Image (cartoon, rainbow over all chains, first blue to last red; front, side, top):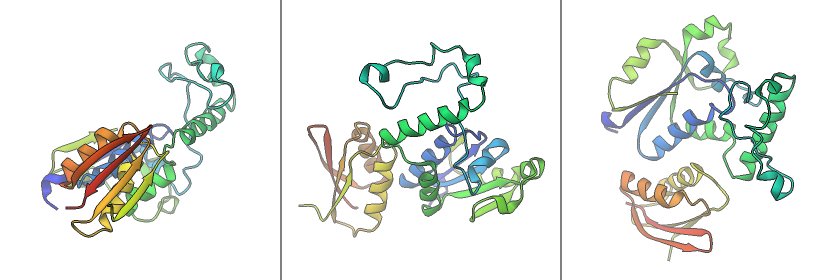
Length: 171
Length: 74
């Protein structure tokens, strides 16, 4: 594969919703004949944990998030509760758990891939996963917390990966 | 007549593309793949996929909310 096909992504977010874009773009990139590397740093490390079933999405401080019910009568599903509910309400315990549950239901209804499955496809497609050593130490992770097939390195390695190709994204 | 058929009905972006890629990679050059999708976004996406990967999109047919793409592996 030629060097021009190289693509890199820096993944920095560790919530359930923001876990999707790096895996979607990386897997699709390989499908489009790109050679893809994802560099996971800071909260993006969450995306490489063996158990990603506990990642959460929060509407707290996120007034842009539409909030529609994935089930119930049609009139109810049509209501966007996002702008209707005072944002401070989302600071109550277990609000994130509830909202994450509803988002997963909505995704299943729309045929959106499970996060675990997208990540597996990325690995099957040969996407290179690099985890940032510095943030692993900083956050007190152990390398055994992460899935197999992850490489551990630092910013200089990212630059080497990104030295060719013209498609480099920060997420 | 297609050599292989991939039913990606009910799946959303990017799954139809990922499954198409997988299906094509198992096929020989010159063979024909039919992809069935209910994702309206795949009309543009399958075309972009074929343009980018060099595979040949022979036809796109819409049939009551279903899209059938016929692709020749190149």
